[in-house]
Image (cartoon, rainbow, N blue to C red; front, side, top):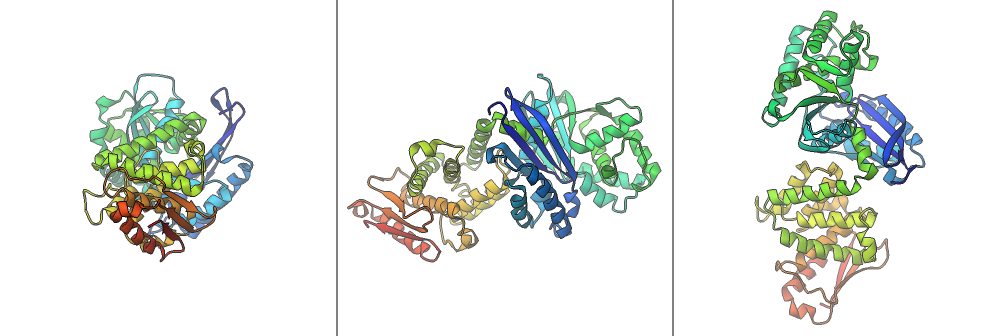
Length: 505
C-alpha cells in the first residue's frame, strides 16, 4: 500500500453495521471517517431462521448509504464481512444478492473462527507491544468469540452462539427484568460456554480484554456512575445487575451513560458477560479499542500475503486431519491448473499473479484438487459427497463461507453426474474450474503423473461454452483406459449447456 491509498472496512454485525474509512500514511492506517448504524438485524430472524422482509430492507437501506460513501473506491481497497446473523440466516443468499449490489462490493460471510481471528488481530494491533498472554472476548449480538494469544499471534480461537440480542430476545422478550430471568439467562449462557473451560483456563492468560459493543455499553454506564474508566470489574457487574432488577424493565431504565440503542439488549449483554466472568474466573476486563473492522484493515494494509498463507495452512490442516493423499492431490492440482490456464489463454506470468481474478481462480482450483479426496475415509463410493459436506461445514481460517462453499461444489462435482450441480452450471468461471478438475482426475486416475505431451484444452473465445481437448496422434492407443474415461466424460457434458469434444482419440 502506498501513502495516500484509501482503505475501507465494512462490518455487518448482528446489532450494528459499521463502516471505517481511512488512508495509508507511512504504512499506518489513519481513520478519516467512521459510520455506524444500529440495524439490529440479529433480532430479525424468524422461527425458521429466515430474515424478515423488514430486517432485510433495513440492512439494504443502510448498505446503500454506505455504498454511496464508497463510490470511487477500488475493489482491493474495500473489504466487507458479515457475521453470525447471516451465518444463521437460511435466506442469506437472497439478502446478499441485493446487498452486494447496493454496497457495490462483495460481502463475505465469515466463519466464527475467522471472525475470532480478525477480532484478535484488530485488538492486538491497537495494544502496546507485549509478551503478555491475552484473553480477548467479544460479546456480539448473536455470538461470543473467545481468543487466546500472545503479541500479534492468536493461538486458540472459538465462537459460541450466545449474544446480547439473542439472549435479550429469549430471556427478556417483553423487556422485563427480574432476578429470576437474569439467573435463567446466565445459567443458559454458561451451558453454551461451558466447553470453554478446558480451552481457556485461568493459568493460560494474564490479562482479559473486552472488544465490541457490549463491553463498551456496560463500561459507559459504569463510568457515568463513578467506576474506573477502561475496565469492567465483577463488582461493577454486580452493581449494574442490581440497578437493572430495580428498574424492572428496559422501558423504565434511566441511567446516565446508557445509550438509547442499547437499552433493549442490555439485559442479554449483562447476563452473558456475567456468565463469561464466572466461568473463566475473570475479576476485571480491560476495554480494548480494536475489533473486527480493525482486523479487516490490517489484512488490507499489507497482510495480503499473510492472509493467503493462512488459507494455505487451513488447506494443509484439513488435508492432514483427514489423511488426504497430498502427493496425489498436488498431482491432480498441477494438471487441473495447467488445463485451466490453457482454456483461459493466459501466460505463466499472469497465472502467477495471485491477486488477479485469474490467479485467484487457479489457486482455488489447486486447493479443491488437494482436497478432492477428503471424504474418502468415510466412504469409498460416495467420498465426493462426504467431502463436500466436510468443506461446507469446516471452520477454515482465512476463508469466507462462500469460498468454502465453492470448494465444496468443486469437490462434489469432480466425479459422477453433473445433474447435482445443475443450479450452478450458469457460473462460467466455476464450470471451467469444474471441467478442468474432472479432466485432471481422469488423466491422473492411475495415481501417477500423466503423459500430457501434445495435449491442450482449447476454448473458441472467452464466452464460448464449447471446449476441445486436443490429444496427439497415438495417445489413445498408448493410454486406452484414459481414452475410455475421456469419451464417457464427453457424454456427461452433453446433458448440460456446455459441450466437451476430444480430438485425436
